[in-house]
Length: 252
Image 1 (cartoon, rainbow, N blue to C red):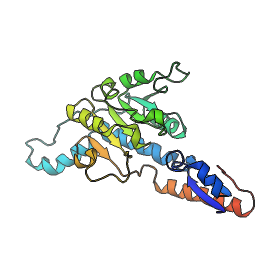
Image 2: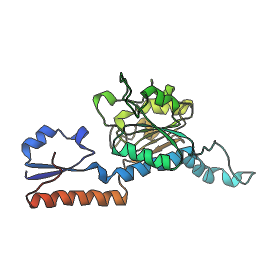
Image 3: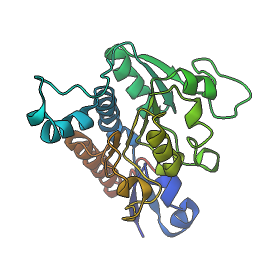
Image 4: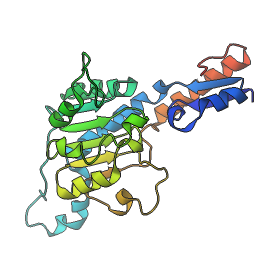
């Protein structure tokens, strides 16, 4: 093969790089910056949806509003975004952009050190301290052996009661059954998951077949805003142009 294009999001998990590089003269990468804004804005959207109980209240408009004896249906607490604490796990391009957007709307942002780390770097807080302090926790780290079930039965009880979890990174970072149990117990206030551990998920996946009112699931589309897709296409065309002119770019 002369040239193969990879989306940077798939490389660590799905592509055995040595096998590709042995068979392809030019293995090029579509840089991650093409989807940063789309994913970051998706996270902010999820924060507002969870804090305002958007999904349950939308459902109540159809199920209960017409029968209400009052002008509104106020079933669950609505929390402001301004002043809330956002914990971010992963300080790459997307994690940092999420932090910038969150601070712009008045949130306090804290970044988690690696789970189990002996030392806490400047600009970070200990992993468990972030769990305990965050009103919202957003995951932006890669799927590596040390991050499988990063958030599970041990970590969820450490979070504030009523805190919410957002995952737009990799499905294997989260123990799906533990999330469902915490939602059912009322400890986890809500969750927005754009990724699951297997995609597409089976029909009997616990989060698919148990439609919890405080759970938002989207089919791995946080990256797919029109601007992000256009940017991704531009990056691929840049790689192709470089290849045809004998000056390949973004090589793996």
